[in-house]
Amino acid sequence: KVQLYSTYPDLLSALGSITINQSEIASETFLPKLSSYFKNDMLYKIYSDALNVFKNTKAYENELSSVNEQIKNKFEGRSLPLISMHVSGFKANTNVTAQYISISIDKYLGSNYPIYQNFFEAYQRNQMQPKFITRDIVKAWIMTEIPPVTSPAKTLLEEMVYEGKILYILSEFLP
Image 1 (cartoon, rainbow, N blue to C red):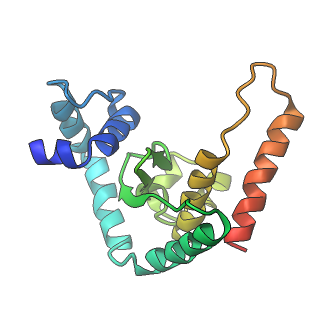
Image 2: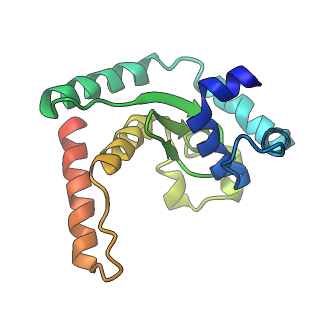
């Protein structure tokens, strides 16, 4: 427990925020709540399926290494943070901290994954395929480098320009 907390404090905090709405890992209730959340039978099935689908991650590692080289060449002093995978129970696709980007692999089990039928529309399921993992990790990184417009009076045009910047940079790394 202590080693887990000291090795992955930011990642645990972010995972707690997403899954149990609690980010304070020092709280006595944090680990019991997180443990209880992941004891759900359906979530265990999803976790098992995710382990089966992603038993070999070499292709993603190669793609991300290639993108990271491009980032280093185009943006001096920048690189992707550590990348990890987690199961969130169909919550946020990516979880970003200063040191990590973690991807919720239970959202990439394939558009025909039977459990998705109960939770997602067909247009959503189309994006829930393993081939989109690298794209979504890189997009999450880009969004940390180019923060969105936070003005309360932001316009549709400002939002469109922001999204256009993200898509342009993404297309440069992943043509």
